[in-house]
Length: 137
Image 1 (cartoon, rainbow, N blue to C red):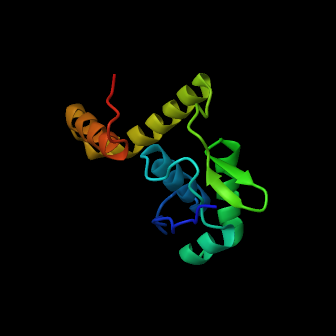
Image 2 (tube, one colour):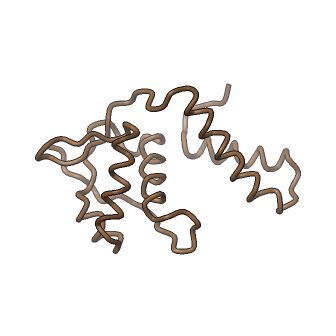
Image 3 (cartoon, helix red, strand yellow):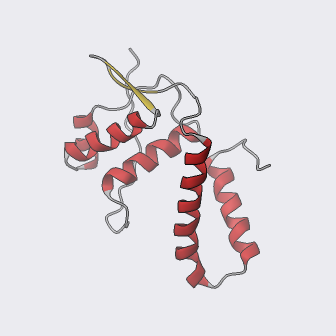
């Protein structure tokens, strides 16, 4: 059984997202970026809660969502592991989530009054950094 390494998750108290959402987003990002590979073990609920100094129910809620989305698999008696790469969401769900994320992004960025080209360039650079080796079409 592979040992789990501590996850690097930065919980931001001022973030508008609930802590469980921050955990889900951080783990999904690490999986998408290849920092966590299929078969890697995640820390136990209690272990991650102690590491992050949060309630174990919050970690359990985050892990449950990751499992429901197919990012992780629970193995009875062994723990939680990063699932094999597969398309986790339907095409329509991908589009729905992309639309919702774009709306949130625009709501946040519009007040900065920056040229569109600068915003797009910065967003592209952030995506490249988060998912090295994946180029836009």
